[in-house]
Image (tube, rainbow, N blue to C red; front, side):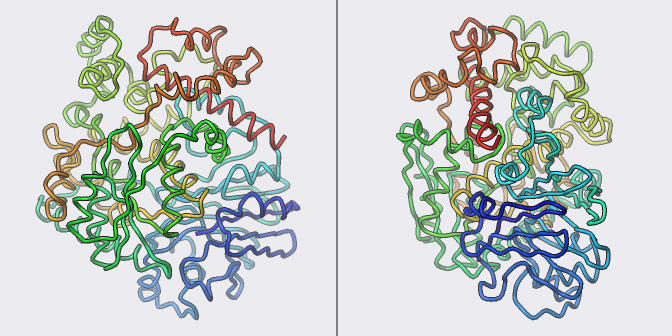
Amino acid sequence: MCGIAGSINFRLDIPRLTKDLYHRGPDEQTTFEEGSLLLHHHRLAILDIAEGHQPMHHDELSIIFNGEIYNHSEVRKKLNLQCKTNSDTETILHAYQKSGPNCLNEFDGMFVIVIFDRTKNELFVARDRAGKKPIYYYCNKESFVFASELNALQGQVKETINEQHLQQYIRMGYFYKSSTPYNNVWELPAGSYATVSLNNPEVKITKWWDIHTYYQRKSTVNFEEALHTVDTHIHAAVRRRVESSDLEVGSFLSGGIDSGVVSAIAKQYNSSLKTFTVSFAGEYNEAPLAKLVADKYNTEHHEIAISYGNLKDDVEEILANYGEPFMDSSAIPSYYVSREAKKSLTVILNGDGGDEIFGGYRRYVPFAKYDFFNAGFLIKKSATIAHTLLPVPHNKKSKYNYLYRLTDLARKDSLRTYLSATIDSFEGFEKNIITSSGILKQVKDDFDRINKSSLSGLQKIMNLDFDNILNGDLLVKMDIATMAHSLEGRSPLLSKELLEFIPGLPDSYKIKGGQTKYLLRKLAEKYLPKELINQPKRGFEIPLKKWVDNELRDLIASYILPNDAYCQQFVASGFIDNLWNRRIKSGDEKRAKMIWTLFALEVWYKKCYLKHA
């Protein structure tokens, strides 16, 4: 795991870059320069510590690489590669020399790969399937600059703000695919690679992997066969992620089945497995459920009590780490959990991706029964009437809130239905956002492509969540939260084999009746105590309403209420004041979410943009 950066026809400020990326690679920092090209690498040494130095060179190729290729030994055998070290970096070099971009199809891993190909005089930049590892770039026809984090890139190029992308962020709650808050700065989309000529630094992007392809492949395997295949794939994924490290690998262990199954299988490949469970004062405590798994497998178990006592002092730094406005409040506990885990080890397994792949969200249940993206007139009309009559809910975990949101999404059309079903921050209040025309055009075009396909309603929303929420929010959150503490998080449920097998399975293997994640729950019966099998999905229990109204009230007010606050220009006059003083009819959770979205924007503006301006 590393931090990387580089440039063509652009002189990087190496001391500044080293400071900005140090947390991603504290073990070694190296700079390589050849002609107009400069490559910079920060190493967090995990695999082949003695020989895996970067940049690495082979014949006419040079590479810097962020991530891990967990099956690199298997790739060596399959492609008959003759390597001198045990480094996955060398495997990539030889595989690329032999197969070109097609080598990406062989890799099970998380990665951003940057290869300088002297025979073509160009850079090859590739990103993994799910987009676990980030890469941002700046291009202006004369020069090209890239880095693992936006703060590091903005520290070099100091670009101006793209206000249309900020409008999009307020509406959606995250930055869409390649968008960033800056002009001329983009994120390479997940499952894509780019080529950049050193003679003419124009970025040409190719999509090399798309989960939509695998949703279109209808599987005919019976349930028992699917159960066995998934079991085999998870074993392979966990084994690779445990064995592909010269350092100790531990596991996060919550009270859920995703991390429970991962931890149970990891114990088979690491007899001294350390597991970590966290609890938060005053919140739902999953520690007793997690301990059942730890006791069953006799892991070296650690219960970490996390306090929000210093949140007022920490929250600005936590949000500023993202280098962009980031409104997912679960970034806060993720930061604290990662900080505590780093005190014990450097590599940790997690259950990320399980909900998006196996069908773990409550919102998937109605979509398994009906395609709400194409609701008929009568359903829309009935839902509109019901939604008008129903009181606004204030408890997001209640069954009533679930019903209220169901009527809300059923009364809307296409993309608005999806936005209501997912982040649901400014939905219903979007007229208060000051927007330019066409800010959702690409989003709408991509949505329509999925909606017009032959997929079922459940497949559509799961496909969209993988492309949007997982990539634009959840993986961003965990990458920054873990790497802020030089901690590497590995996600077995996002392995190559699972990503290419699970989507095509019948809907009934994912949602059965009102049961989410049906296949994985059946598999969990083999590994986990029965008390865990039917536990509802909780995730981190975020007391956002409490933060907004109590602990962080004065701090948030100082950011968003002044008339000259930057966020004020993105919403209608008086909207923030009316929202703050409860003169707008809104549920407490939704109110807190809108306020937090604007607070995150203002923190970014003051702590990131103005800092680098």
